[in-house]
Length: 271
Ligand SMILES: [Zn+2]
Ligand SMILES: [Zn+2]
Image 1 (tube, rainbow, N blue to C red):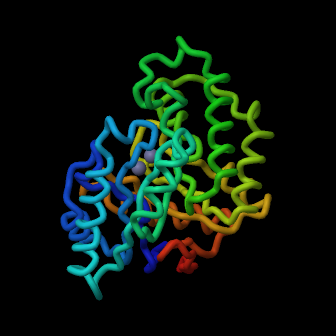
Image 2: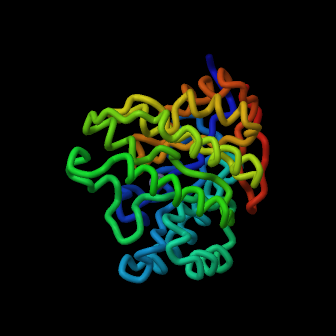
């Protein structure tokens, strides 16, 4: 299947501490791959905002994204966004950033529990209580959706990228079905889009985050808005897995991908 409306709504540049390439280079890569629209979403980890020097990073991020937006006018639709990590660990800072910069799209993410390190850095999932960790994680997701001042929920089952994908831990997700149903229902109710993060397709977990089962459930529970993002941190990954994911979304009953411009949803048909 070939789709013409290819878009990638989750992209990091060198203005993310773990990003590699400039916004311009990411745009060039997108054009080469036939992508029609990119949304830059550099990291802003709210809970370590000062220590991480995110104020400066955000200023650079927005300026460079805006430069690439004008340089690629008519060739590639560039949107300016942010990946806001742990916004509810410091709501005041989160809300100030959102109002200081006029973003097209705000992504909400949870990368770590309060006062703890990123799930990426947990060395041995066998040594921790995975179920209580996941329980706390989904509670933080719910708290963030209740707050609700964002447009797209990123990588809903993020900890599984490491626990299941890389460390091959057996996790019985049916234990969380009540809680994940609550998440999916609340997203639909609050009109926040569920992201299908394609990074898992090129990583050990071998599937999108979240996977097909969760996407179907979201649809059943009234979810209408989905976003698709590669979570690329380097030019090689721009648009990676987007086409395959559009086919997955279509198969799960979604006809459109939601793109955000000036914080308003725009429905892009999957065709
Ligand atoms: Zn993330
Ligand atoms: Zn990201």
